[in-house]
Image (cartoon, rainbow, N blue to C red; front, top):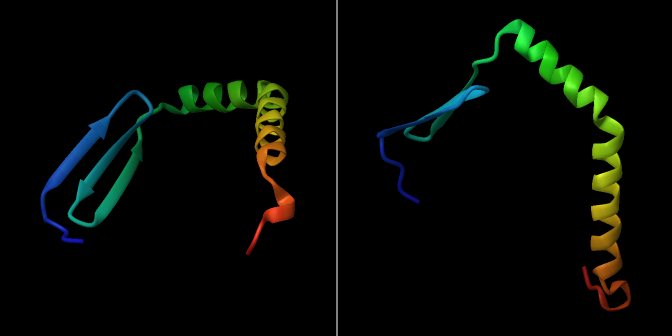
Length: 71
């Protein structure tokens, strides 16, 4: 793979990502208050998120044919 020394940027309200050649930089754009509110929202919704992820894992595990699995 060939790496060029060009520069790309992406930004939104939450963060800014800059690629310079093979280096990637991430910078958070949230204020301290916004970050606290974001973490609180994640914490408050954790049981629902965990339940949703567990259901997805169970669905994937059920679709795998474990008897014919080779490693």
